[in-house]
Image (cartoon, rainbow, N blue to C red; front, side):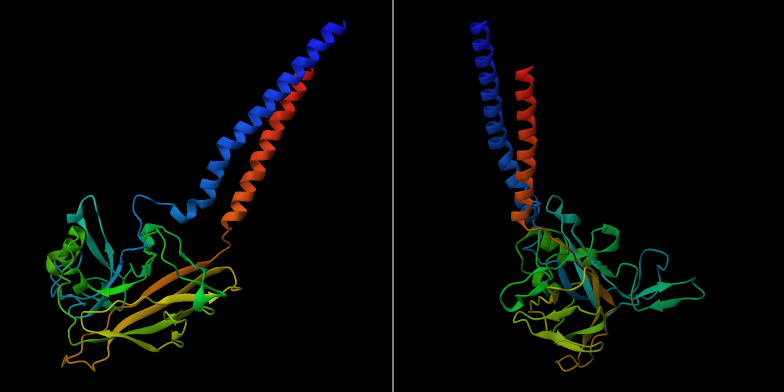
Length: 314
């Protein structure tokens, strides 16, 4: 009898030891996965990172007559207008790279009862058809400490740098060359002589637009910020709220204007109206995600250990 009890006791110790070893192995295997999950938001899309590529451009519409669509054959209401553009690049098929005009002038109504609208149905960033949520405002640093700011991310539309279409002319990247020459050269016209301004059309309460030093560039509807003259500029607005801003969506709308103080004797026509959409939401810190993952892992492993221990005692 004593020998049998000793054998059972040894069996229990062995199974418990195996369970403990299983717990240790589970932790070593799964913990790196938890860490990877915690860090994933910072590197969510390794295949195509949009944070370092310019997405937004200012061009001059060189198409005088519409050639496609319901209103083909009519004068283009955007001809010789400044136009806000978003670049859709395709690295796999660079020849398909193209621009979308954002908030350009558009027609509506029947051919015998036309209306010209100072915007179009594709007038928001992120573009509505993409079904991408508003751009998330994240914690700022430096001049923007204590604020939530627009920050380049690996998501499309996240890099808010704005350049002239002419900046693509000398690029050695194939997709940029296709962009520059897209739509039969519609956007290749020079902005030389223009003095380009960004005019605020509307803005949500609590949302602000600043420069690289944290100073607001516009404050009230109608205010104009001078971006630059001609074809050589790079401008990145910073949208921000206070760090304690209420959760929810925020928007700002603009149009581009030629201030008429450049060398161009006839200022270019203003653009249509376009909007940027942002959101303030609760974003868990990586350490919090990591901690929650570890707690869940330990709970799962301990539950498994208890089941194995009870099984060895039966």
